[in-house]
Amino acid sequence: MNTAQPKKNIAVLISGSGSNLQSIINAVDEKKIHGTVALVVSNNAQAFGLKRAEQHGIPALHLSPAQYSDEQYDLKLLELLHTAHIDLVVLAGYLKKIGAPLLTAFNHAVINIHPSLIPSFCGKGFYGRHVHEAAVAYGVRVSGATVHFVDTGMDTGPIILQKSVPVLASDTAHTLADRVLPIEHELLTRAVSLFCDDRLRVTDRRVTILPSAADKTSE
Ligand code: GRF
Image (cartoon, rainbow, N blue to C red; front, side, top):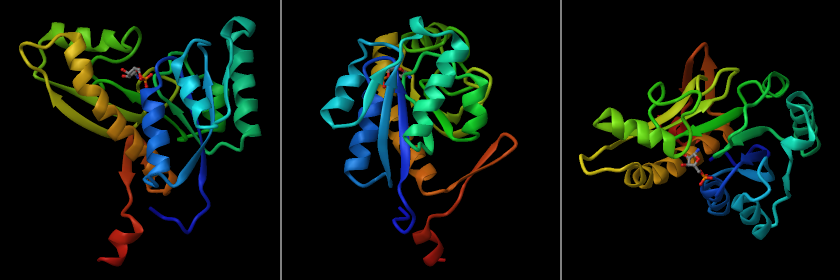
């Protein structure tokens, strides 16, 4: 962790339980992420993740898609992010597509966690348990999680981290989801930490992880 530089401000966008959000909050508290969760936004008023944020004194709000066109929604979201001086936007179980204005303003600064090994079981319709249902139905021997930069596609941006888990013959979508979720938390917190330490570089589709300051001094 490079504590010499100012902490980055992180916004986390959620739609549901917020366990990935919680893992980021915990990692910040444990000083594994040199950053601050400065804003949580959900498109779902019932998202438990909003309560998780409030319990930690983090500004959290519901932005209702019903009150805006898609374009106005993105512009409102962009306004909130700029007002909070956000450096990194994390999609953590967020089920609404990010529009071009936000991606332009936050180029290679929006990351997403996906519960499979992209490019398997991703894209339109592959979210939450649907991902695991497809993996079990296909009969894959391994699945896992992927953290990637968000681009204009759906689950198509440059991959930052991946980690696999075995898929057992006895697995259901539920048991596979339970095995993958902790890996999501592990990869997402590590990717956020790397971003906050300015250790991610993107060249075309390839992401390079730069050595830490400690690695450099031990050379
Ligand atoms: C998780 O299964 C994750 O794969 C997907 O959304 C689900 C809920 O995540 N991105 P969370 O508990 O709301 O972070």
